[in-house]
Each structure stands twice: as C-alpha cells, then as structure tokens.
Length: 217
Image (cartoon, rainbow, N blue to C red):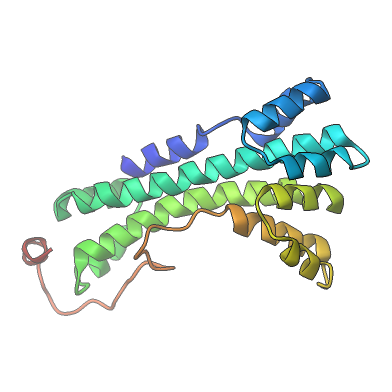
C-alpha cells in the first residue's frame, strides 16, 4: 500500500532521537563540533553552544535538532510524492487503496457521492498518511517536555526559530510549553498544496452508482 510505504519511508529516515543522543554522547566535543559543521549548522549557533554552561550538551542539542529537521523535510517530500502518485491513479485503484488503509464502506459511500469523488478520496488518503506523520510529532513532543528550558531554547535556535519569537515566549504564561510549540511548528512538514485540514465528506444523495463517478473522475 502506498500509505504504508510512505510511513516506512518516514520511520526509516534516521535513528530515533534517543539512539542519536546515545551515539553523540560517546563523541568528544571536538568530534561533535566537526560533525555539526559537516551538517551545516551555523557558526553562530556553535559559538552560542561554546559559551553555554555545558558546551557538549549544547552541541548535541544542535545535532539532534538538525536530525529532526532533516526527517521532517523527508516527510514533506514524501507527502508531495504521495499526492502525485495518487493523482495518477484511476478511481477504482484509489478506492482499493482506501479499503486497504482501513476506510470503511460507509466512509467510501460518502466519498463516492461527493461532487468530486476522486479528489475527495485522495484527500482521505493524504490525511491518513499525515496522521502517521503526526504520531511522530507526538513522540517528539514527549521527548521535548523532558528537557530543561535552556536546552529547549538551544534546540529552537537550531530549528531556525527567531530570537523575536523566543523573546515573546518568555512573556507567555507557560514559557516551556510555548517554546516546545515553536520547535514543533518550525519542524512540522506542510501538507501538499490543496490538502484540506480534514477529509471532505458530504451527505449521501440518492443512488448514483460507482461507475458513473469513475467515468466522471
């Protein structure tokens, strides 16, 4: 199934954050800095890390944030590729994919009755793929909640969150939660252009058959 292939691509984009941290902890600071430079992390970010109370931990935060950004970029590209592949398929094939991905018969009937059934079905399949990506975001949020604010700010800078946004976060009622939101928003991949926030399901109308919609799709 296309959706499962996309999910596999997302999950195999790189090591988990815990695994990456364990790997980085074994490296010396000089090796970490070399790895950070090779990853394209800015000199300013590395200088800020060097001035922190724990330079090694700060560089590790920069590298883990960079890894997350890379994975999210892969996720975004995968979603764009998924839309292109779905749009090239016939309605019958899309319907089979939807059934395989768990869309029930009632949901399919509502989609079939949509004014644009093929577009509606593609929307549903994209939303299901996006939901799998969102589960990765939920795991990331749990990990972020366990970090102190100082490390979160370093991670936010590595994710290209602006100084202005971080300064505004200091005035929030829950500073830590606000910084976490900034990190997640900066790394969240956008849905392909044209994908709505929710599948389009309209009420069923009287008795139009599948073949009529297949031909019109």
